[in-house]
Image (cartoon, rainbow, N blue to C red; front, side):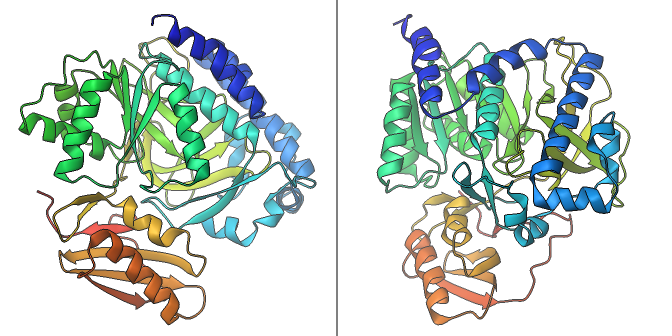
Length: 451
């Protein structure tokens, strides 16, 4: 069995990526080398990649060709990240208003449509090419290897997967099985499912876990309450992402599974931004991603001071994300990490969390189970779901035209299918949904305490 992991990592995975038209292997080899460059060398490499990227989109992307001309911006002359201050920040509204102009001339057929909702902003439709996907996969693989695990090691993923799978999902599951990855749905956290998850972890004895911190913490707490030992299974690391990782969650996951917890920060839209190394630093994928921390006026703040996280992904030439506003608040580290890598450090990220909700029968559901009902509805521009009690959930909806009975019925039926047929779903059309006092937007707010 010791030969299985190298065969998957060095034969099956490269073959899969080649068939998919990805350049993952080349990007991975480059990243393995560049992480050990000095801080100055990493900055110089990033500046070169940034310059090449801006020249490329200035030539091929109508939106940026026009913007650069209006601002007399010459991308070939930039010397570093500081020159980005001359360009405006990019938000979701701008992307929605200029979707076609953000595609390069002649890009038909090489872009795939994606969308994101999450817990930090309005739903967004955008496009990715193989280049962006390849580099994100390479960055993720590099980060997993920091923890002495790799592709082909047994992995259990607790993620927001649908219960009923289509043909494409079944194909993905078959591919995952070949790579020794198994997916567990994070949508339903009922006692029955939690018991099933614990039993599966014990049988599978994975080398690594991957999932939402809230979900892994929930499994850990359940296992501990049942007296089920999971700390002697050989789990080497638990990777968490997509939500804010709280200290109590890290402690519970580490204690119960008997392994360190590696935090990650990123998203479908912004990319694989940063990942935690064994020394505890969140390293930015600087070869591909520029992170700026800006104040309310859009000016850079010094390392150690908090501000909005704004990202430029240098592998999005086919649908550029330039100074993209994540909506998150964070700080840059002032000193390099003791691990020896020259990659910059994101010292903190605040504000990302997605609530659990509780169905009428007591089943605990991940908030994304409700988000998925609304985020792909073309009639819905924005929404917020507030679970007032087990019997009442209110939904505020910003619709693109009028709130029709058909749309209202679709929302109500979708949420009742998850929360319970007898639950009252109060759907209200509003013109705007303001953020919370913290400045963050939350799609799901539950006022029901999860047991």
